[in-house]
Image (cartoon, rainbow, N blue to C red; front, side, top):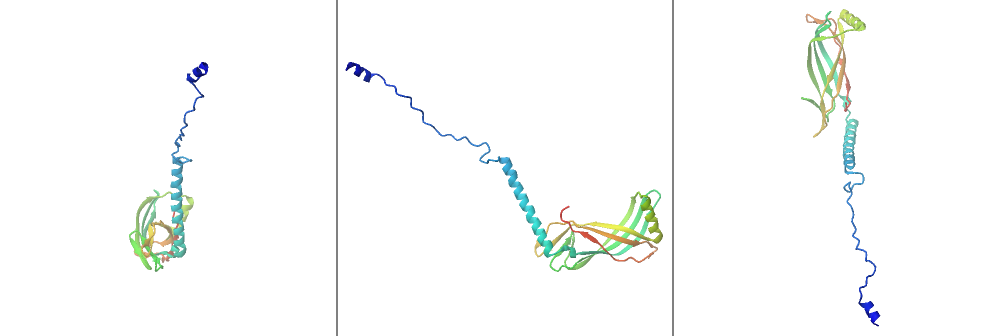
Length: 211
């Protein structure tokens, strides 16, 4: 009995109780984005830019289909060439004046040529080109120039680079940069009289939006 009592009074050590487990979740290095913050941001910016570009393209296409701007006409109606000399030192001296008409037949669309405004009207512009320029001609170009000099009528290509906007009601488009090219046959005027009569020339227009 004494032995049993001694056994009961002695310290009793049972199996070790495991410590309470605390769940711990390590935060993601990507800040909650599986693909990485940088990549997600670039993807978002790309989607926004793509959406804007597509929207602008569709609006421009719709505007072009409803109101085709190719109805606008450019003509050179009159020219005066008083000097067109090519010297042995490869110097071209020239003095050219011309009148350019711009016809917009659209009654609902206004066209703004920088500081010029026109809606269903004909706008006349006067331009003057005078000066000297160093030009190197090859054999064929020199032959063509001599032939034109003999006839008194010169082939001159005129190019215009414009900045225009279209307006429909209160809506204005962004600036467009059409290129106008006019192939002219200009007679030389000496002492106020031309060697031939200038014929009105229609110009070609490149209305591409993006360059």
